[in-house]
Length: 429
Image 1 (tube, rainbow, N blue to C red):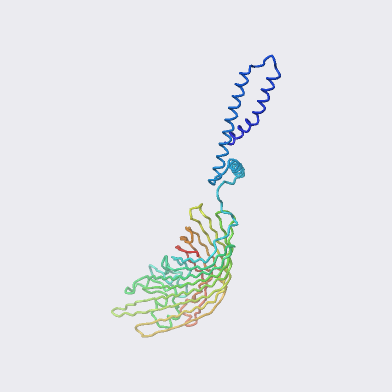
Image 2 (cartoon, rainbow, N blue to C red):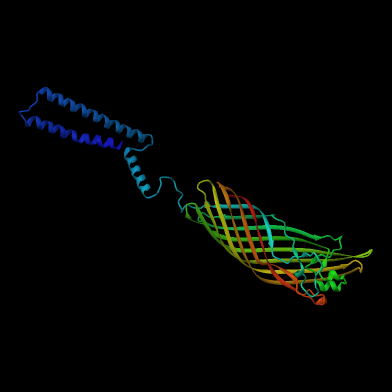
């Protein structure tokens, strides 16, 4: 259409010149002077062409006027838009709406509730072991005689929950608080208390106390017929943090954060050793109960970063989160040993308690997939959390039955870790 307008304008401009040239040829060349009839015929043809051109120009003006009345664009405006589109495309900027990086963040109150299903990984001394033949030697660590050790493990995918509440400002700053509670249990047993085989190790037995309790010799040397351990764990975590979100790219958001963390961990282990001794028609039952507890309270600083990458305009995004904490913890540990002998009707009990403190480094990480629609979102992912030096326990230093009541305990600090799946749902108001 732009070419048509240009052609019409050129015709209008050149028409008078053509008329002048025709007149000059008529008056300047007497030898070739046409007749009056021929001149009138040429003038009529030119007038007819001029009328046709005038009609086309008037039609184009009416079309432009109609477009403006209907909210459209004129040919000149259309030409300008086409030129701008070509210029933007040449610079790699497509003619479509793009969310600017400086666009304010979605402000308001936000809440997320998550269900967690975690495995507990704890490094500790196996409570028992099994041997095929008798072979312990007095004076040696009985653990060295076990062909295969056994330890109780916490149940896989134990349930818990995590709540997150905060406020997001349009500037990108936010403040938030997070609370998590998780519990786990575990149980394991080895041997048969009704069979006198003496092929199960009592790895946690204080053999000096067993000797003082006048238990039978094999029990005193660290052997029994049956062993069982049950475990309980409760874990609380509270985080208070502030962060700042940035958009270095259209679909990428990074949020560094810092804050405080408080962690509480409670563990309990109950171990039972039973030993049956048969002498002809008579029998004797010895039993040892060992109960250990640990309570930790830790407080310190935490820093980390969140990353979110939107997958196009689908509402889906990949997220990742990592953080490190340096906490200072206070620990209270205890151990109670109760040994009984059925034939002697005797019972010996010893209790120990200790209070310690120290640093607890913590590392957290999670990855997952999130779907967001307006003010609602759901997410699924995997998380891992490692607490170093967070589980001190009482371990026996001396295993010899010559130590009598002088055997001592050593406080060994062990690591504990959690990992598993998270399922969440959240809103922003």
